[in-house]
Amino acid sequence: MLLAAASPAHRPRLPPVDQCTSLPGFAAFRTKLQAAIGRKDGKALLAMVDPDIDISFGGDHGQAMFGKAWALDQPANSPVWAELTEMLRLGCATDGTVATVPALSSTLPEDYDVFETMIAVKPGSPLRAKPANGAKVLTTLDWDIVKVGDWDGRAGWIPVKLSDGQRGYVRKDEVRSPVGYRATFERVRGGWKITTFLAGD
Image 1 (tube, rainbow, N blue to C red):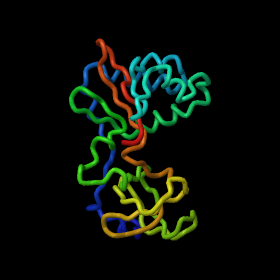
Image 2 (cartoon, rainbow, N blue to C red):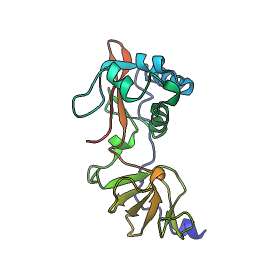
Image 3 (cartoon, helix red, strand yellow):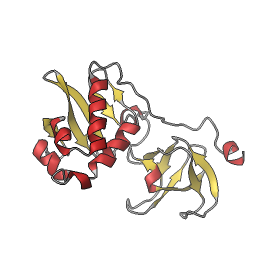
């Protein structure tokens, strides 16, 4: 009860949305993609990748480079499956023709600085007074949009500030940056393809 009282409903949140179900043929494509992820099927995934896929803002592109970047020559050990699973879990946004996952990269209000903002993507995550598992829980987070304090990008705990002024620490694996990995899907020559798979801005 105390935790619930400390988590006011007016704090801004960004829960997943699925705006993509009405896109013709996309539901079947997504189901096929999820099946490939479940099998860790590198060949099936590459078949869903556009030949000119963009994988960096530095000009890297193409199926071969995507496969190399994500170690699809050894698909059982590739980190791409966990990344795709999480991206799909966090919803899908669309402008009417292009689908983007996770949705939060497209639905974050424009007045937030994407480099200073993260979203608590594991409902019930504790905000702790200190960066330690046993530290006092100040409140729990439920898709909260939080402002990131000074953080070197490597530490396992991130200092954050909530919209109501509370400050504390949250585990790195319980929040996600809007400029983390995201993918776009587009209809190419009549079929859906993964056309970008990028992080950064």
